[in-house]
Image (cartoon, rainbow, N blue to C red; front, side):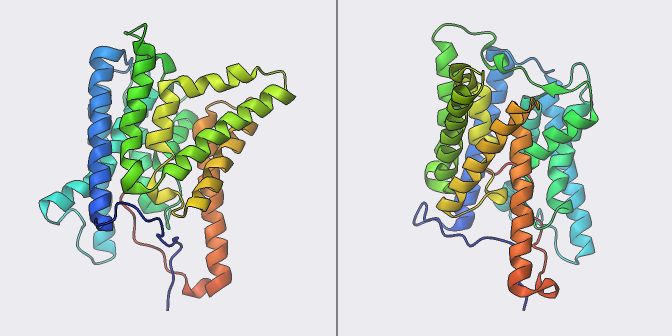
Length: 312
């Protein structure tokens, strides 16, 4: 008998829909939302990346998914998962599509597309290299590029409203929040995680304001920006690398907020993505230890590679 390092799916959501149907609807909703944000960002809002960045990142992510799935299927003597009916095949590639758009949106590689492409490939490849899957793909891709490519950096937060002003400075983050939260209300069951992360972020900002020389208002300021909203509703909520049970989601979100506060206090940059990656890694180690203690090392079988990408 074997067991896998996964958590029981217990969150009751969208009654009447099968898990596969909920997953497909959530993926399509997220893909559509990110497409809208990308198009508006490059035409109306003021994204600073090259127009080719999202195209190159999506192409790299899809090609990486196709190649790695083909190699993995051949190695395990199974049919590739993209050889399914058209709708399911599209759903298989949608996570990689979302990963490509997110990497292009979050990173700024000056005149080079290499950092963005590398981030997308690393993100997709993580699902095949790290098993069972526990590392958030977008966070891993972003952090890897920031370490390996000195010329790369996170996109400036102001890019989401660079070409608009006045009331649109508020409308854009709120619109992004609405687009991002919608799939999680009934389809993914990740609202406890979103609320815990946002509440924990606010709490760490207040604590830092009370016990350090940092202004609480200044520490809370990132929450008002579109970058924070994008991270909260499209990145941290990846269903394949976060807990399913509501209480576990709360613990995960609060832990990410605490680690973020510690990183900022230690003057470590890019705290959002580093904190998420550290918490994901700690959770993966914890699940592995728990599984071994319950079944013994010889009874643990790795899970099949999950669909790579951002599954919101």
